[in-house]
Length: 236
Image (tube, rainbow, N blue to C red):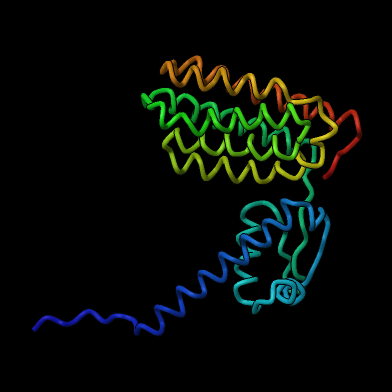
């Protein structure tokens, strides 16, 4: 007589789902505190202090901190809590090398997919929003539209693993980019380069799309690294 497969009680399934939701919520909230520079590099707190700030128990906070450590945003110190990690110039150089390579691949993949005008509309809207923000000297709005463009480009590349890796490194560079946003030259080149990339994707020109985005990331990375070195900002 065949044996019946045992299943976990409904209460256990619900508890497990709730725990995962709490961990995801804690991870999101802590990540945002770091990316918005509300927790500056070097900031330290015990696990209990973090849990108290979030109004949560220590278990989801502990798991969220381990995720943040995997993301490269914090260092978890046993029995001492966590410390927000700084980003050095050499870190930024390596991050931009990764972004240049992987995002250029995403651009090439997008150009190979024969995307419709409806599918390209999000990229065009983000580019138009960047242009409008610059006309009003609103760099924060420009940065938001720029981030939206890059994430939509990754979506259109159709490779979810590539997108996940790239977004992690974009997050790690975000703090430095926002701190230096008003120190850098007005980003008129980025808006123009984005428009050229959209046209290359529309034409289905894979090599052109890759080369445009590669040059775009290399230029932006050089501008940022030169600024950090000129100002002596070795760690942010």
